[in-house]
Length: 360
Image (cartoon, rainbow, N blue to C red):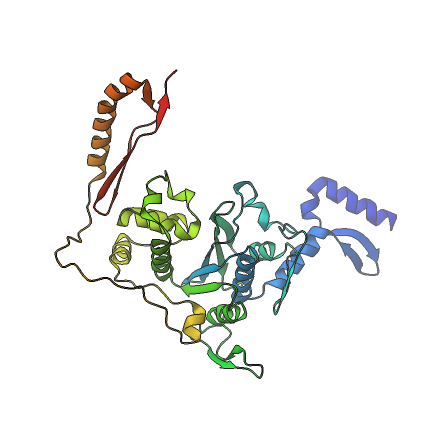
């Protein structure tokens, strides 16, 4: 026994602890695994199908206090790619990679028990990263919500063959809506979660285009145009509202990419023009509920609905002109520009912002 322990210690020193799976050789073919190896094996057991990964991402968003969760997913050859965007409490920048480590959790004093088991052990995101090709936070911040990306190789982590069918919903003996029939695919996984959290949060499921259109409409309703004038960047907004900051299709495409939704410029134009409609929530679709349409005002046929478009070069030239003209005012009031003026075009309005220093 002593010789075995010495050998283990020698190997640990030569190769590093990460390459050593055994903490103690007990004899008779029995060993005590190191904590890291035990965690890795548990993680492999926790996530056995793509659908397991999806439910863990949903539970993670719910436990972060999200009231709205948006799931964009698509298949690229053998790769299943999933983006989950939520309006929960968010993750501070300096901890965004560490949340994928084992036993890292924000739930020191609490845990969540639901139909899928215990949540709050700090193992869900660790399990996802162990079983996926990639898992990372795309963007987040304290009180700003989160966009999280996961990519699984379905030849290693399998998924159901039928990923398009929606489940049939019926009432059980207690009068609750449940998924009664249908393949146990990603759609059903999200549907079961949406029904379980029917009065807790709304869940949306679709392609990147469908989710982008839905986020844009929700942000457009929630944001006041006046508050956007005082923002330097969309990153100051919650993740779910950032598409509402887009001034044009090029801007929309850039912001969508920054939250994990890849779109073409043509698709961005169609969303801004309203030709791609937003989605109903998963629960609303399952329960055949109609989403209340916003009250439409009378159509002004004389109104020019063409968006104002100014080239980037012309905007930069305009900004340089304004910077020169500011010099006279600055000399009179002892002011100087902190940076060149910011010019934004939104609808039929051009907004110019001067960031200034007061000279001593």
